[in-house]
Image 1 (tube, one colour):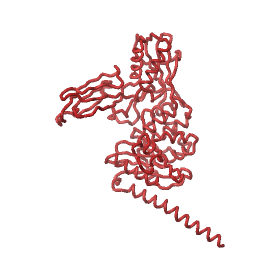
Image 2 (cartoon, rainbow, N blue to C red):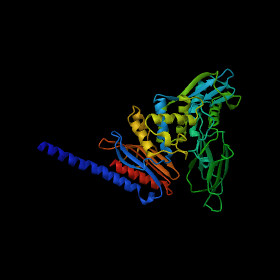
Image 3 (cartoon, rainbow, N blue to C red):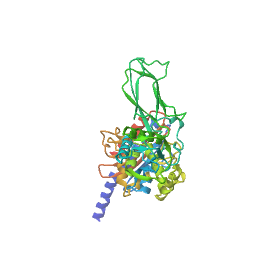
Image 4 (cartoon, rainbow, N blue to C red):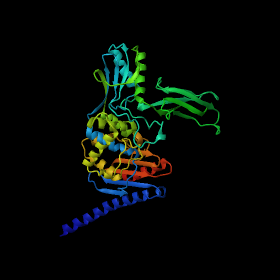
Length: 462
């Protein structure tokens, strides 16, 4: 009898210690999200124990919200599920009987100028001296280079790049600007230097800004669908050298032009033009390859929209049919979500990156995905693709120097009036926490939302 009394007393004191902590945490988190700063905003949040699945806190967990780039969690998880971590993305080089050089893109968003230099060197090393046409094979994707629900006025921003199976430099070009003497045009150069663009420098270096005249701007004639880079307005003479980035129209021809220019430098004579075609009935001479993990890391760590959109279309091309179509990839994603217990009847997925304002998910959807991934053999790879607080990616400068540094692995999301964060927290006591927070309809500065979300995460991490 005494033993039984002692047992119940111990159990009582244990529960008194544990459950008040959980209750207090829940109350604290609720108070944080009911602050006056968020009074006119819509907030959804959920926190669960990853190992037990027990809910620690939830608020508006069924409300549909715009996730912004946290949607990339869904895209990358589906890519891992369908394609497997050993899948690789290839860029193939062919030569046909008419000495046409064919470069076939299969959605490798990681290709840079240096990769095209490598391709040129390999062609030269094979003793190829004369080429008729450079043929761009982009048959792996459909011709729709713009995501559903993307804003027209996001052009020509670097994050609103045009999608193509043949990519280079993230399908953007860098414009480097340095002030000149007062009343002189600033120095402007493109990186990489290429003939694919026309550069119009209509700007002026000034001693002081005159509000009667336009401010400094670097843009592209995107309404005309032309690759004419325009630099205009007033640049203060005290400005530092700066780099601006704009997206590129028809990036596959950008890639083809860079390849042609590097072949020319290497002494290869090209008598024809750069044009579209296919690699049918051609001999493959070599290929470049990147593992799937590298695209997933790029999409999640750096929140790279191009990588996420390419993954969506690769999924469609590999598991449905060529050409890869975004809607087909989304259909496959929803099948996967249903298989893991996510109710897809009330979620809207419009793209792979989260750039579309059509996307609507709840934090319940996000937590269900995170919980599923936690139990998979690919979890380590998935977790390591996420930004780490205070360490790398889009969380490199957040929660730095706090007890959350190095302990929070989470995908960020940012758009006008939207901020979100979702992922995992590794606590000092060995617990792993899955969490998701999405805030919509905020009219203030985004940095204010980030501070609120960081404080929310820090409270959980204690």
